[in-house]
Amino acid sequence: MSGGEGEAEAVESVLEREVAGEYTTFKVYLYLLKVGEASPRQVYGGSGLSSPSLALHHLDKLEKFGLVSKDEHGRYHVVRRKFGVLRVFVVTGRWMIPRTFFYMIFYVLTAIGSVLMLPSGVREAAFVLSLVGVVTNLVETVQFYKVLP
Image (cartoon, rainbow, N blue to C red; front, side):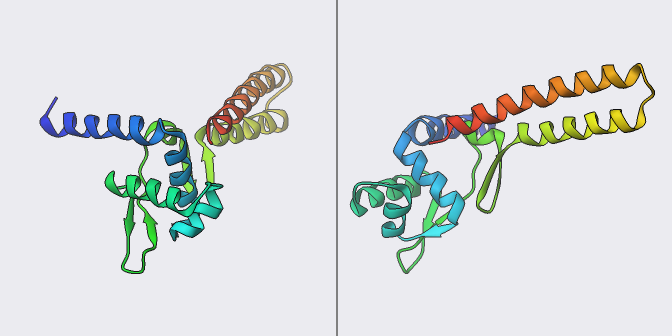
């Protein structure tokens, strides 16, 4: 392992412990991922924190780890990074979608395709296997959403 890889792993470990492992800081980061940029007062309101100063504390912590940048007007801009549970999500604008959702869609399409295109005998087996994939990935998708604050 090279020095760069070891350093990257150390940074990831710190992010997982200090941000992903800290409920409120992670909640603030997730809010910023959804909105892109915000003032401390907007973070306070949008994250359900008890005060703007608490929002500022968590924003400063995120800035220290390079997860947000502050502009000259005091607004914080998110820096998108994948760490912790975020590795299993696709973040698109305001949406955070677990990868398992896309697998579930694949299995739904496979089930439909098997019913429409395969001959009898093979069709039923393919349909059942596809349904197993749908149910498994639906359960996983729901579990990933439950992990988020």
